[in-house]
Amino acid sequence: MDFNFSDDQEQLRAAVRRWVEKSYPFTRRRAIVAAGGFAREVWQELADLGLTALCVPEAYEGLGQSSVDAMVAMEELGRGIVLEPLVQAFVASTLLAAHADAALQAAWLPRIAKGTALVVLAHQERQARYQLGVCGATAAQIGTGYALTATKSIVPAGDQADAFLVPAQLDGVLALFLVERSAPGVATSGYLTQDGSRAAELRLANAPATLVTRAGLAALEFGVDTGIAAHCAEAVGAMEQTLSITIDYLQQRKQFGVPIASFQALRHRVADMKMQLELARSMSYYASLSLTEPPEARRRAIARAKVQLGQSMRFVGQQAVQLHGGIGVTDEYIVSHYFKKLTQLEMLYGDTLHHLGEVSARMQDTAGVFA
Image 1 (cartoon, one colour):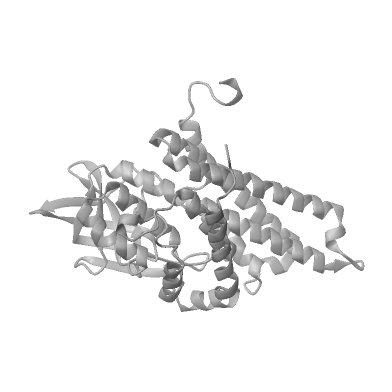
Image 2 (image 1 turned 60 degrees about the vertical axis):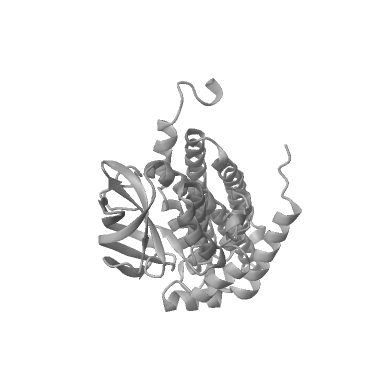
């Protein structure tokens, strides 16, 4: 098998890296955080690069690329810890392409591709504790349409989004709906998250909605797995940059008249960080490649990847802060922001302990080397 990236994928990587280096410096990121954690002009810049169109089918003005292309883009955005939730464009476009009818696809997919519509997944509820099948939101059919009543938490850029993909109970079965933010009965309350990005609480009170699919749980699992795979790639990029910043610091910081990078104990810790990074990278590839597998195999692979990524993110982030000393936790120094990003990514869509339980629950009668 050929695991090399294609020429087009390498060109995509180079283009996104150039944009991050030239157009998204740390000073701009700090300004966006101070302004609320989301910038519509940055979202449009990502669209101009073609990133919002990556996973949109060509029939709807998209590029029709694979999850591997999305992975390549997210690695580079992770290097710059970009705040704008591009992952949501991948989740929304893949969900609508796989489950919505032609009319709904035609209404929203071209807008997602052009960056004129931000559609985000709003599925988290306080009582769910990462369990996708636990949902207190309800939907009722009214004539030919539907009305939703729900409270959803930590919705990415929720008060800036144009529409939401919302799971809700319909006739005792979990279904998936699209709700426009401008619809009556929709209320959002935005706030900054730990890493400086924007999220919101979403409240729906008999809000009009469009049915995406009655197979809501299967669609939700697919959407979440798509999001996890993309965030795994983002974490790899963030860890790679964290390691690079740490190595630069060790080479510049001196004790006893020599760079502390020459101390053997510290070199060993950097080697351990590099090993965790490469373990994470291989499992990120595994996650993205598994998105085309049957649901059971896909879910098992995604859980395994999230466990390894969670362990790697925690280790790399903590080691980076410790190797920097006190400056590593100051807001003025960039590595603290990478640490916060990695900490938040570890908890996103289920923390390491949750996914370890998923791996355990999905084991067969025999497992590992005993199979």
